[in-house]
Image 1 (cartoon, rainbow, N blue to C red):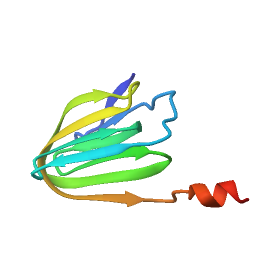
Image 2 (image 1 turned 180 degrees about the vertical axis):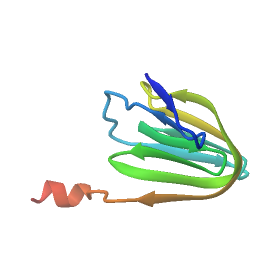
Image 3 (image 1 turned 45 degrees about the horizontal axis):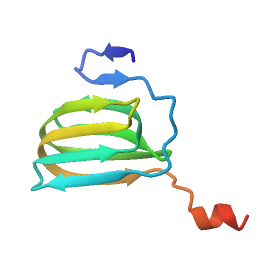
Length: 101
């Protein structure tokens, strides 16, 4: 896994070779989040984390965010800090639409 740090202290990480079929998000008291099924981490900084799950971008917004554990090959991401919101962005293909195509 290659790490590239830019001038704005945003860290960009390469993606995993695995394609996960599902994901799970566990949030504890808006202070920590454990996310499974992460295919790629796009960027990390103290106010947001952007990652890819199931071909969709997942945005985690907050303050004092930090990544404690990251294992892209296993698809696990653990975030600590003050979590304000988690939002899906982009297209997610419905499994029923794929089945009946």
